[in-house]
Image (cartoon, rainbow, N blue to C red; front, side, top):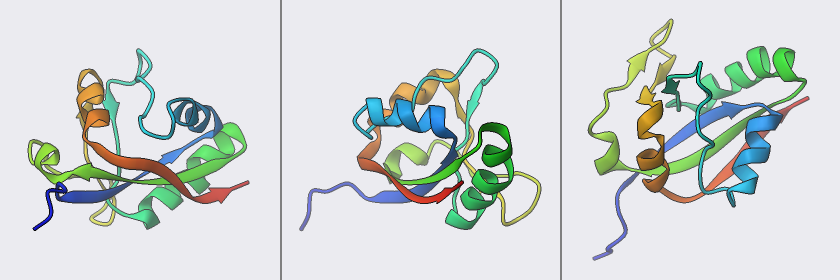
Length: 117
């Protein structure tokens, strides 16, 4: 029997600046939220993350990336997935002041799985 924690795969669309900060953290943590960003939004599907990266990040910053990562299932039990504009648009809403705990619940590295110019 394995002692490895059960995990949930999540995705996050990011722009070039956030990706640089993730890489500075050894691809193991997301950067702190900015003062006008009270919530951290990881999403539940790669398709939804790709839509955001392509449709929002590219126009805003010239590039968009989809990251994939694993989070301990026991940590996520404190949060319910939220619907953001459609039943296929599900995301967790993690308060900014809980991002350190979220980062501590990431298992392994944050990987870039898609990029958009």
